[in-house]
Amino acid sequence: MKKTVLITGASAGFGAACARKYGEQGYRLVLAARRLEKLAVLQQELSGTECHLVELDVRDRSAVAGKLSSLPPPFDRVDILVNNAGLALGLEPAHETDLDAWETMIDTNIKGLIYCTRQILPGMVERGCGHIVNIGSVAGSTPYPGSNAYGATKAFVKQFSCNLRTDLHGTPIRVTNIEPGMAETEFSLVRFNGDAARASEVYKDAQPLTAEDIAATVCWVTGLPPHVNVNRLEIMPVCQAWAPFRIHRQEE
Ligand code: NDP
Ligand code: 8X3
Image (tube, rainbow, N blue to C red; front, side):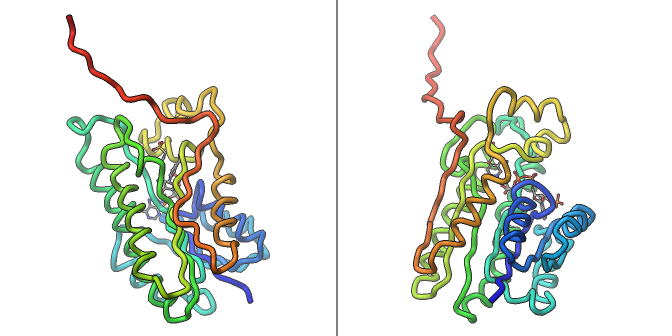
């Protein structure tokens, strides 16, 4: 039977690539994001795929509840939820950062993710079928300068994913946290507030992951036999690795 996948943040980057990949594989799609016009273009591109678009700001708790509880059949039976909507804002050190930016990241990456999960999960449990894929980040495990609140939101996603697994023990529902490293999408453009030159510096002379790499990973994880649960999957481009510890030495 045809399965339904709901992807948040489907208007760009990983989310749009997941939509294309699941579309190719014959899934029915529920695509959510704030930029409805981008979703409409994607829907046109995916002609032949059953698509339902939802203009949604995941930070808006009542909109999430209202819109995701009133999906028209057959889109209302969500088999796979890809909690992908998210962002980083800025790279300033904690003492210089904009508190609004921290709040936006917390509202989107943490609160948006739990609103969507809480809305979709009961139906999965009732039907005895479902997979929640959260898009975390290497930043949820590895600190780096300027990651402050962003990394902390992804650490939440990592632990929340594990805790969901423990609550769902005894049900067939699967939960996976995908933790990508550097990938070229609109991510840096958003992080640097539309500064395209600064965003492109991030990827200069490197070979970052692509959105398609992550979509292939998400589809692979959800396509595994139903008794297999990938708990966490960290994925980096070969050109990226961890930094050494930094020692601040006193001046002579
Ligand atoms: P993009 O900026 O390309 O895409 C982000 C998507 O999230 C867009 O579709 C955007 O849609 C959506 N989004 C942002 N805020 C909201 C909101 N309030 N409500 C609904 N949708 C929202 O970035 P990526 O594809 O790279 O990022 C996807 C996820 O992957 C994020 O969670 C990010 O933290 C994570 N990630 C990214 C990495 C990277 O290097 N690119 C690495 C590791 C993790 P719209 O603006 O239309 O609402
Ligand atoms: C996005 C990857 O390294 O910029 O989560 O934090 S990174």
